[in-house]
Length: 328
Image 1 (cartoon, one colour):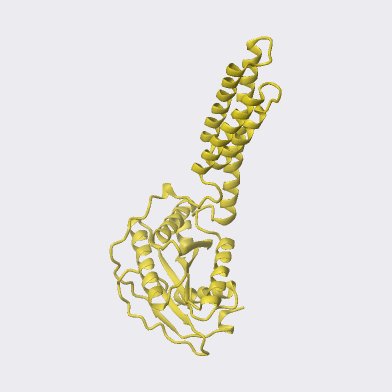
Image 2: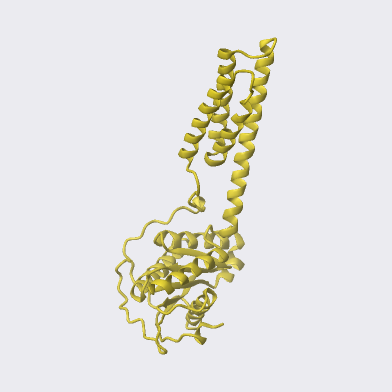
């Protein structure tokens, strides 16, 4: 469904870049990655819980002596801390558990006829605990990697289309309840195919990574940048009205052009921005309307942006915002 079928507005387009104030230097491409918030128990919390569990198990092991062997339960805190805090903490926990086991045997005695059997049991226990720690830590890394790849673009580290649509749907639900405007921008690299053809696909990938870093480093924590696919990016700007959207997109497009020029790429970006005071019927409809604005810019000569405000009225209104250079 085209957004024009259910909401109409007039558009205000600007194709002249605005001088931007002081910019933060974008991070190096070699540091590209996704930093996500860890859910559940923190590393410090995991270590504390594991230490407490070790002491409890060691105390019970000493009290029950050889009549009830509970040393196998050392595996529980080792696995737990390896999952929550990583392999280093898991190895440390395994070594502490083995030391406690040795201490219990030396203080409380052991049932073996020769000490060598006792130390053999300690070594085997240590090997089992270290192996479990390593395997669980590796499993945790694999699980985190799969989770990240399921929600993020592998090349740029930005959110992928599925993750972006999920967040956009949440924003639509919030907009229906609070009636606060939000903005959605679609940006496309002009003549990206020529970059691939002339400089190669590796350089094209590097251009996309640099563009992603430039976008993400300039946004608020509440904003979300996404790579929709190919050379097309999307930005979700919650609680952003037409004036703020104009300042943001003008600064971003100008900054992208400056960064590309400094890095030797003769390319530019076209952007379409929808400011939604009336909630779209769906996330896809919002994307379609912003995408249409971006293609309007391409047909008008590229290297610019176009903003359209969608209101609750049948006829829209222009985004009458001065092209100021004050940062958002």
